[in-house]
Length: 471
Image 1 (cartoon, rainbow, N blue to C red):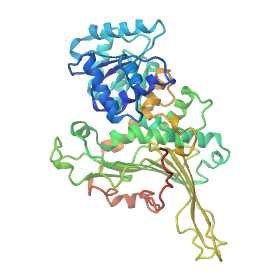
Image 2: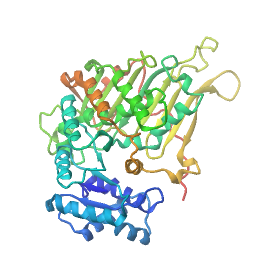
Image 3: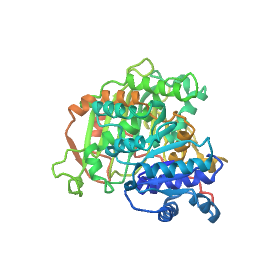
Image 4: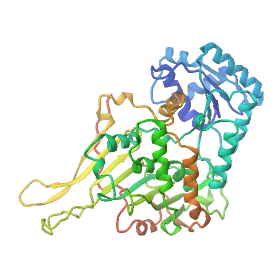
């Protein structure tokens, strides 16, 4: 694996700790990593950098023996050394692993640097029989996405390209497919006849985190909605694939994107937290949104008339990653007005995409005691409660492993990305003005008019049931 941007923040927080675990586990084949970046490091210095990253951000401790095993497989080539120096180290590593050694390039670099990396790989003759993992965003509008894909396809085929979205690597995201297609309880009611609306809500408490240059050019919509929230929406809304294999799943996701109605700016709320304009690197008259909430609809037989509400933003009240399916309410004629039925909103099926995967189903039930008083109850599931809790892979670990095996199931295609940018054109051409909101809140007040007569599920009225952590 050739890791471009090997000394960057993503490599330090996620990629190097994840590769270390995969390397010492029995899940992955033998892995050798060649890191490259602007820093002038040698192998020993890169190994020390990786050791610190694993100690600070890794989810699992490595024994001295496991670290030594991983460390000897780490090498470094400074970017300034050029294409031929990189090629030499990579070929030496492949030769040491045998004739069947695969080659995976991970571009943990800013989007503007991606094409120069691809040119370097071409010059180094490291393209044939290799795969390439690319980080978002994949363009900033339809024209730039088409242009980017065209440039990449000059060097790599679509089968070689893995456009990564770490949200789809999470256990809870994949659990959506299991819940929908493996259970006779849910699939028959997964349509406009029984589902009232859907919410995908991903607020963040973090601010810019020294990424003003990147964020000013993207904003919340380009950074999060196209790259993440729409991808999750596709898992919720897709038709049953003909098989649980990459081509079939990608085709059903792309059908969702093609069926998405163009985004109406009148159904979009853009916000900017109050202190954003004082952040270092931000223009004092910036119109960049740090928050966005929108209503979208899918124009097909299954979902006609069902609104999908998406929300994400920076510096919000709490961090969460929630998918909430609201079912239509049952008739209440048999229950007296003071029974409590209908007063707590519709029944919900909720997926929590946080690292500890959780699922909850809420419903009305009778309160113990005399009379017919009803209240909301819930059934909850958490991966921590299962015997296989220790087998959960962190999202990047899962996706890197899939890329090594050539499995495109959880990755995005060029067609899918271009479809989304096409549907986003009305919003990009005529964005509504940003509205201020105070840090630590849930966004501008206009979000309540956007979702009326429904209500946002975050913040929750009922907390998740917490299980004691195992020692």
